Length: 306
Length: 328
Image (cartoon, rainbow over all chains, first blue to last red; front, side, top):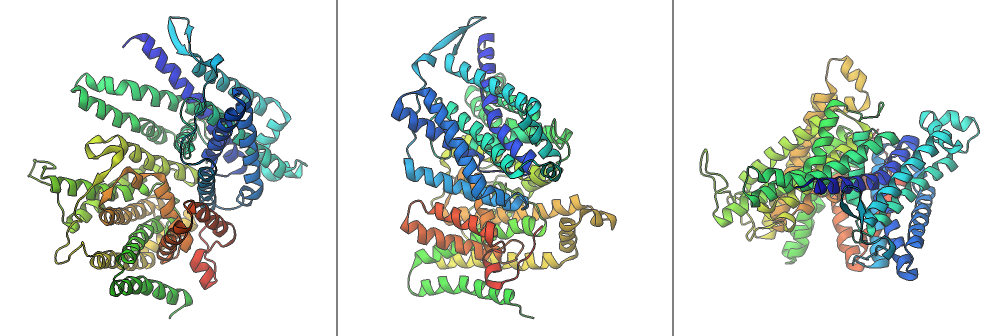
């Protein structure tokens, strides 16, 4: 176990973390501003990935595929918000859970109907494939490094958007007091649609970026959605800062735990049972982390009262 | 006094008995199996409804208890069929293929899991509670996938259905009778629970937490107790469901299962005692009828669910009886 391996795994954890941030940012914004829990966020991730795979298949251009993923997910998000979601803001969480669960069924089966059950593949473009040498003698896949940089850039952009722009002020004002902002003449329902579409676009982009590493298939959004929930619970609902901290924490814990726990167990166990016990524990690690954080801070690292 | 709702309840529970009996006399074992499945899923819904309808706890992690019940059956029966001792200390135990013992183990372990998950997640409320129960359910799902000793992702198959003293459980109508009787007992239990001092205090904690505290009760303890009872009943349903299929796999633990159990409760009508019976029966009928028409029947299920949530909040019973029952 060399330090190069450790650094590589830290980069992998970072990569998972920034992708989780793209998912969690939309979820936490939608919850913070509209008070809505959206289970169908994973479906928007899937929509982005499928749109990217389809466009990459037609045009062969990865850049166009990414643009398509943003556009398709934002459009799907805006449509869903206009038709279904906006009827749910005044409802209780149970109705929101059920309606968005229904949306998952519709999205998943609809995608299966359009594209079939077989996974699609989205290839990493040639100019981004292959390894790149980093200082310290690490060979790291260029594509994964690109994902990390894109993710960090978007995180920075999102912070600027929220902190420095007029839209950001409106979003923060909407979180604090939705009646007051409506009284001040901001078209609140347009703002809601915009926030929802923004969150959807981020999820769709994450889906497309990850889709090039994994396969693009129906149901791909759900494991990520649940990780994003863990991220939000850890970070505190409604907090973008919390989403970033939580995403990096979960990304690191999941990646490093999966690699190093079996090796750690092998110190005092025979290899076969160490591998299986390590893998079992590693699969539960982030939930244990979540439980531990809940015991200390029930409303998350950066959360106010829920 | 018989209200329209209680008349409807009687009609439903009688129909659930008559349909398989008729199928039995017509020698249609498949219909009996469908009715058995509906009864078992309704039982899981009755369990969830104690937390959801009575206690107002929106648990999206009840698949955990359903799956633990399923694995209790799978593990005990797998050891029994392979003659491998499950443990040798403090006494030799070779697993079991006796349903009563399996049910006991299923109930105890799902209650324990509900206790641990409940203690952690009831520290929070609202949307945190939903996400945390979902996350813990998913934790067990991933654990089951990586647990290679009991089949991992492939699950565990049992060759012969487990035994119940005095009955031939391989005969569909006799296995249905077991599931039906347990469902009826659970319904009676849930009805009595709702009217007991505990049930009234729990409903009060749902409606106004401060007042319940002011009269000297602890909402946390009330909710935790209800959550454990709820988990135990859903766990029992899981053991029966695994026995129906003679198979248990991580799918039983996945969050789709949690969503489906919740759908049974909602299709029927939240907070209504017989809601899960109506919901599970409707779900099985839809699955059977639409599933025959299209492979993508879940689109229609999704649309139906969406319409019910948006426009018919009382569910099936609400639509038939008329009066909407609040569940805030």
